Image (cartoon, rainbow, N blue to C red; front, side, top):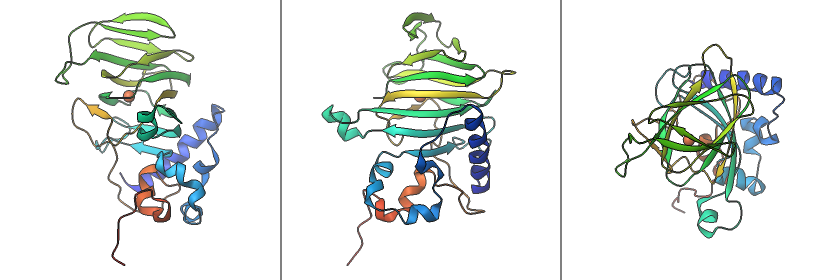
Amino acid sequence: MKRSEINGIMKKALRFLEQQKFLLPPFAHWSPAEWKAKGPECREIVEAQLGWDITDFGSGDFDRIGLFLFTLRNGTMAELQKAQGKVYAEKILIVEPGQVTPTHFHFQKMEDIINRGGGDLVIQLWNSTPDNGLADTPVMVKMDGMETRVAAGGTITLKPGDSVCLPQRLYHKFWGAEGKGTVLVGEVSRVNDDRVDNHFHEPVGRFPQIEEDEPPLHLLASDYASHCRSLNPHPKKTNP
Ligand SMILES: [Fe+2]
């Protein structure tokens, strides 16, 4: 993706979030120059990969296959292993009508997907087979505490206020319903690590390759390693 496209998506997202009265935390608004002046007090933001996350899944067509996410809070896999500390995560997503997030499941993350407002969210579901294929068995999910049965590859629709709990290894694909407007989607989950925990049915690029055609408006979480070296929890070793 071009940096100019990512900047444009950020500006549009900020307008939509304001309309929906969903406000982002302070670090969402820091410029790259402000990031450079930050010290170890911000290490949690970097370690937990909080912040902006915009991807076209390598499609080259964000409007058709893409997703806007902002990670608001998150623990680490180390905390999850200890079952102590921050073992939860929260994200806010924006999904446009017809904009698809490709079929995937998570190995360790269980997540509630919540329609927080705007249009309707359509989610297609499959159980997975032991070798990570799509099973043809019916899916049982809980929608706001109610057991719901869905045929393999069937869809559920979340209207504003509705939610569904997606357990580990349950394949899901989602998009905004046509003709219903942009959807504000919440995600509440166990610790999230998008670098290792996602399995896509068809291989995709989870993080975009970026063509730097203009300066970043705000850093993506995936920019921290290159733009915030002093805060990087795992800096590359250099010779003295
Ligand atoms: Fe997911």
